[in-house]
Image (cartoon, rainbow, N blue to C red; front, top):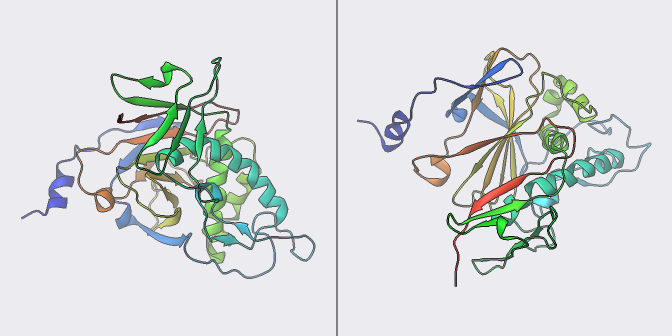
Length: 309
């Protein structure tokens, strides 16, 4: 007799088609736990040999270094430090994190993610020709306060609130996540994959970079603090990305594929079993977000809201 979980997965429609990208055909599967093993996470201190920056290779005897945060504090105050990063690389990463902060602001507001000062962030929309911005902030009392700059930001009939974020560079968003993933790699693996570090300096991506972020917005919080986990495929499977970064904060679960050294015509993207995280549900919507663009973009996020008197 099948268990509840087995019945749930057997009821899913077969995956017969994918989507195309730069000559790839991309397919999806729900069995990440079977094929991938964790090799690093933000709750574990990474021990390394040597006194050089893991990104640029500069010697710490010749340059000043502070304890940089491995996980950007925009996701909340955390104790994950990266003492193997020089100040120059930390400052460069700050530019990427500016775009990352703008891009993820609606997710952090809706997910009730406190900033490093312990306060709930306040969202202000871009103006787009309107006199005033739309402002949204969680008030700490199980509700959100918002002031509409335009009624175009709220669909009364469907109860949808639109977040019009400011300008950000999608390529920098990807680089910010890639940098964290490289920081989580054990020394022996990082030494083998040094070629990935070069992408932090490149202005444009080539076919080895798969610059997509897969977002699943969940009903309940999945982490009380920001949590990043780096996974490696268990065996040498030709169509499976070797490394995947999972990012959890608030109600958001993000999945980022690291550059693929020898890409094939087909790529299979594996997702975790969402049921194990939040319980059974008929469908889980996964949004595919393209981060390839190297020029400034403006994005709109839309969330369902319930009005209270």
